[in-house]
Length: 84
Image (spheres, rainbow, N blue to C red):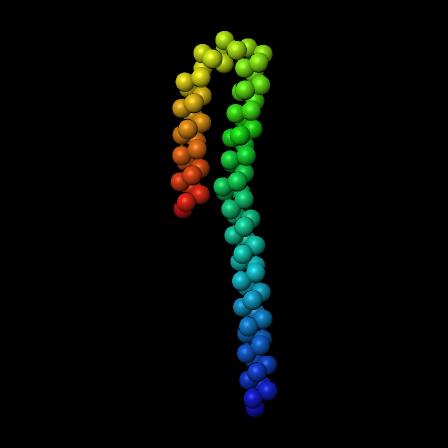
């Protein structure tokens, strides 16, 4: 009887370990998709704006205030999302 119980306990532990690993992998994937990917896209957009600054500094400078507002709002939203 004890060996049967031991086998059942081991089976449950193995199943729970598998569920825990799968859950961790899904959470990591969701974190990357929800938090990291938008942050990377925002950084890429900022880099594009900065590269355009070299081509047309006056044009980009005229929009600096709006660009800063948008980037700050996006950072706040991404931070709030990351916290949640």
